[in-house]
Length: 187
Image: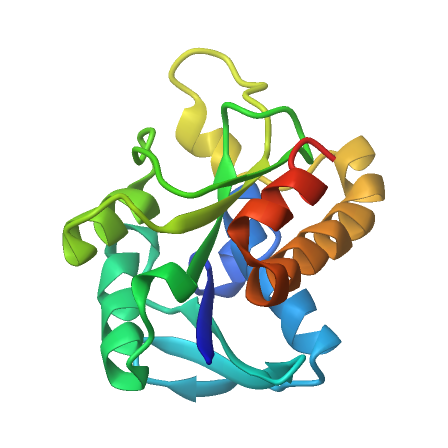
């Protein structure tokens, strides 16, 4: 069985430690856990590993957020990975900082990465793991906030939260979405 885990983010050093790039950070932790290294490839950076006998592709798209769907569709087709074996990791303004929420489907909720994936796959029915970044910004400052860096309090808790999200992602691969939602949502 093959799985595709996609951590959403933006390429470039100016985005590296921003809230919007939490998907990249979780993807990096998953690769580290599986002792897999990222290599430059079509549409981004890919690491390949095994988890409990299952092949896991971990992708960090280099398409910028609003074109993420191109990378997801390409790798699903290239590796013949079914939709139910795809997990998208993304930031979410609607959730308090560090909150973990896995869902089987849903709208893009204004997230450009999810919007692109919905359009390219022509469906909203795929698993997504949402990392709460809260919405602590004044009106009209959303872009600055999501492209801003973590505050001191968030930074102190970030490592533990990233670890939890990596474990939830690997649970998705082995235990399935239902069991993972029960074990991890809200934790």
